[in-house]
Image 1 (cartoon, rainbow, N blue to C red):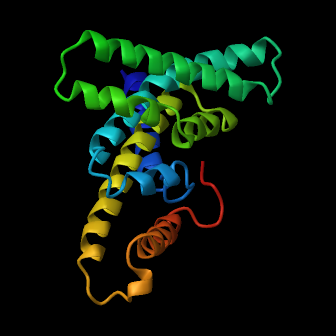
Image 2 (image 1 turned 45 degrees about the vertical axis):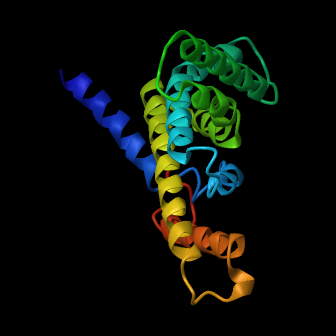
Length: 203
């Protein structure tokens, strides 16, 4: 029973760590370009994008952990392992696509259109590379994957809300309206969240 509680504690500890102190967007800038493109795009639901990315991260973590370890035991060099992780991402993306095709979920067409963008981006690959270079256990990897996905959703919500408020503000000089003030906001928020970790990675 103690081992189960310890494993659950590690899982949630790494999820919370990835969600706040090691937020993929604000402290590592993983997927920030995609975030900026999504913000203000009425054709794509930012929340659905974040949820699909989160699901992809959680499904990918155990597969990448196992195949990454197997690649190391087979003698594949560090330079070849990112190709293994890209292959893992492709497998997870194909599995998600198949599940979406076979089910009748609401907004199915929109989910199918968003899926490649949510699965094949630097946030997903970067999170896997972090978990492998830090030699996380399986529990730590899955927890970190979940936390990174939730952190992305948090970032999407914060930036979307900020854009709504900033676009309605008349106190912003005209030269800074739109994307410039949004990038300044993201930079200030990133500095504030980076204060959780200081100048070194705490993992």
